[in-house]
Length: 529
Ligand code: GDP
Image 1: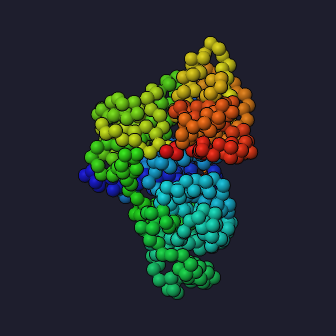
Image 2: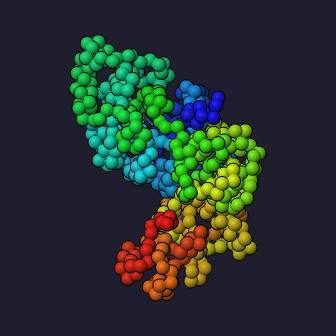
Image 3: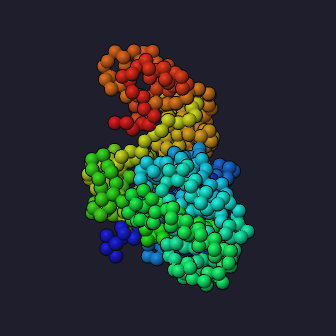
């Protein structure tokens, strides 16, 4: 298969949802269609198996949340599908934001009874800002839930989407009869049996055909006709370009648990979802079909075996091919690196690959060369737009609790920060170290990992900070900036890149500071130039 065909057959996407909406279940059903796994439950079972061998993942098991993102790939109808899994738990939102820089589209899962939830709002906002094409899957139709039109309204109002339903439920919960597939013009009847033949649909292109009564009954038939009329009256017809530009979002209904409506979703997805898209670098826009390799690190994962401190850096390939044992330029470090055992991901396994294409994710064993956001090329000085840091929500001093192990502690903190677990700030005044995280849970993860992977012990001390703001003096020589630095010395720190950060202790002091020093700009993300 030629290079261009390899690019065109790839679909790299993420599934996002509020926890419990059914992301894991849907992922697993998608894998079943690809023949990548044989039985339901495999994805979760595998998760539990892994936790037995891994201390780090033990935290996940204990808390029943997904700490780490992973990659699941399979082939379906000759398309190479790469699913980048994203943790739904809000404490790991940064991880999810970073993963969203590596997807070409997303599927949003919404619970029919709960509708749009808090995490859905946040994650969809990030996708909207980047014009990522989105498909919505409304899940759990086998249960009583909200009215379909109310849900569609919800999606428009709370998420700011412009939806167009491509399927529509026939009844719901106890009365759930099936789904009319607007996209394929057929009916799929619900039997409540997940092993039912998945091809078992009835072609039905004329909804006014009286056969409809015989198939789903009089009342349901009338309701369906009314509903579809309303759909056609209210929502713009599906337009592929609008979807690809992030201006329109198709909606599907189904039940992941019952494997119902999932094939329809997948069949439409592989047809309309984008193949790998061009990506902006600081210097220029890179097209996937360019011959030379470029790619960037969007995630670093601690090795599952705590005795080996190597890590897996996840690279999204943007252009060209990634080949085993070929030297590539690590742009930030200015040195060439070769990889003898790059990993590709297949279903829930990883294996060594010789060649990977744009859209693919390769996992590279790393002993500390990589940071999130690093770029690899064949020699070009190219920098993919970094992945900005946002102000953390929680801050604590980190102290060394074992004086004999201060070197290990330093190294551990350093590497965990490169992985993006949290952010480190060093106070200007006294050099004390402060850790900032999105969720309180990360403090435990850090403490646990420092001890189990680095043999170091730490303790925390409260440090009341409201927000971290990146300082942009505009003119570093002016007196106002000097005055700002002198007066606010206690609240100034450097982040890991050496950028100056103002740690405001309250909303009030933040406002006062902004008023008093108008020429000193305070930014809420690390990227403002
Ligand atoms: P995640 O947190 O978004 O990954 O959600 P899970 O896939 O783990 O699902 C959360 C719960 O909802 C589990 O108990 C699933 O069995 C259940 N669930 C998922 N899909 C459906 C569905 O279509 N119908 C019903 N009734 N339950 C579902």
